[in-house]
Image (cartoon, rainbow, N blue to C red; front, top):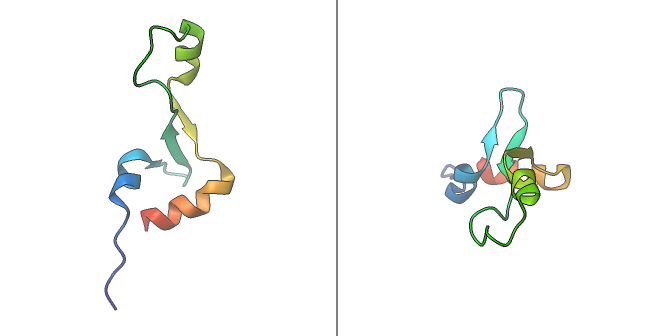
Length: 63
């Protein structure tokens, strides 16, 4: 049987921490920032943990 390949799009977007948590960037801070308030763009900055309902699916994609 051939080996499974990890999903290259997922491995670019998700970081696995030393404790096994999955971190991702928040969506919505790439473009059209002039109309968004400073409060909103500050809120969208930084990393957040992947939702527990999606974690198992993401782990499968990462291999």
